[in-house]
Every structure is written in structure tokens, then in C-alpha cells.
Amino acid sequence: MVNTYKNSTDIELVQKVTKNGDQEAFGELYDRHCSRVYNKCITFTNSAYEAEDLTHDVFLKAFLKLSSFKQNSSFYTWLYSITYNSCIDYSRKRSSDSQDITLAANEVERDEAKAYYEKTEDELLQIKVGYLKKVLADLESPDKMILLMKYQDDMSITDIQDVFGVSESAVKMRLLRARERALTIYKRLTKNP
Image (tube, one colour):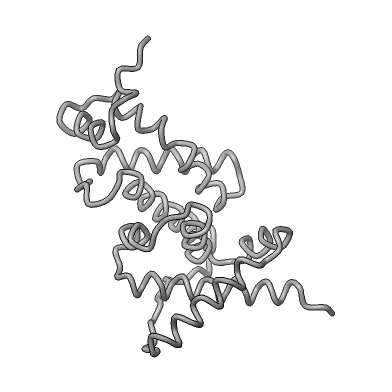
């Protein structure tokens, strides 16, 4: 069977699904993005079986919400937002003492904030690979997700803004706080007794 959608863009596929209910077009979207969504899910579940279930849930939600995709960002950024929210929901359900995450941004002078921001980023990038998995395992889900978005998926601040629906400064503050918490965990793990 010839794949008639192979050369279609994600946007064209979305239009075919929303206008005509074309399930083959959605199947192509699934095939294109399934492994990336699964890889995000497995970092939260640490279980192939649960990651598969979560991946299917993400695509079911995406299918049901596809008409709300406004094309303000790429399809994958929109899908990543659903993936992120599903992973957070999963983590909250697993953790009985999980709290809603609220990040308060303190007003700091721009130059000081930028220097500190870059310093924490440099320190984070110097964590040895052996410790990185341990640090990620100890991080809360929102911190882990935003760090993976920035450093593993190489998403821009703008793309992360689209996922969270917050301002640029809020994204930068969340990244800063996540790096600080990651560095604290790293320093605790490498402390000599």
C-alpha cells in the first residue's frame, strides 16, 4: 500500500483530519511523532508498558483536541504541550504528596539575573554524565520536563513559552529554578561523607 501522505506537511495532515475526518492522515502524524512522545513519556514512567499507555493517551487527547490546534506554533510544539501535561498529570497521580507548582518570579536587575542565569547553565552543563541520570531521577517532574525540553530537545524559549502558555521571562525563571534545583541535587550526590 502506497503512503499518500508521506510528503504532506503536518499542517496539511491536520487539515485533512479536521475537515474530512481522515484517519490515515492522523496515522501519519502518529507515525511521525510517536517515538518522540514515547521518549518523553518513558523519562517520567521508567516503565516501557506505562510509557506506551501514556503515549497512546497523548495521541487520543491530541485527536480529540485537534480542532483546537490554531497553527500559532508547530504541530509538534502543540503535541509536546499535551505530552507535557499528560506526564505531569501522571506524575501527580503517582505521587501522593505532589503539590501544584507555583513559581514566583522575583524582580532582579537584568544584568545580575543574566550573569547568574548563564552561570547556572554552565554549571548544569558540566555535570558528569554518570550523575545526570541520578539528578534527573531526583528532580520533580516539572523541573525535569523543562530541562529536557531545553537541553535534550533543544527547544527555543519561544517554543517552551508556547507549551506552557507563559511569558518569556517566566520561562527563563522556570529554567533558572530548575537548574538551581538540579545543581543542588548534584552537589548533594557528589558530597564526600
